[in-house]
Length: 192
Image 1 (tube, rainbow, N blue to C red):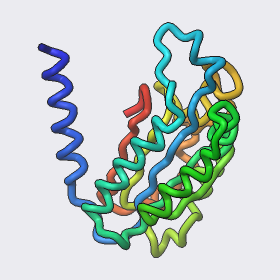
Image 2 (cartoon, rainbow, N blue to C red):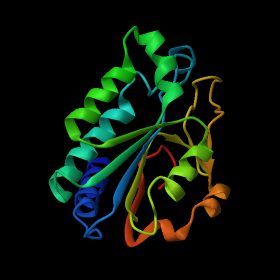
Image 3 (cartoon, rainbow, N blue to C red):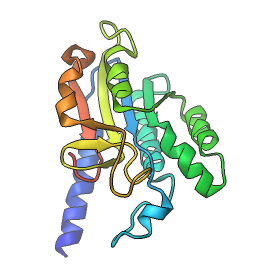
Image 4 (tube, rainbow, N blue to C red):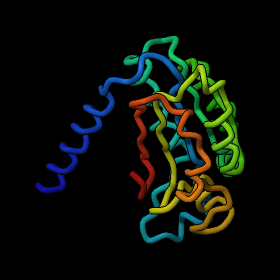
């Protein structure tokens, strides 16, 4: 009963947050981490990354909401950790990059592939002329711990990563890149 109450409250808060007023114009950024590899997930007590598109699907659903809220021409950008999907594509025996491209085409967003976490900071600061195009929203879908977004968690090394954005790196992001009242949310495992 308590779990159901918490779930209903969480969903209600998500619905309210997704309806919050955003600045009139700017860029909405969705950051998407990569999936784990089977060889690491299968040994976990509670494996949770069975489907390659866990984060892509969640980001797609959120993008669909944003399109309804902001309109068909709103500037939405996805930053995606590429190597994770290239590696997982070998296990899946399908072109995951191509499948992600079809999502981009359907929902009309700008797609930027990245590798190291420093490329995320570079895009936030310089991906658009930030004096003209402020970031009005930023959401993360991917693996995380209390201190960082882990873009390739369990991709190269079990329960570890080589590409991340640590909370100590946040000072490298220009405050001027964000619009006043920008919406920021992490849907990662442990960050919020």
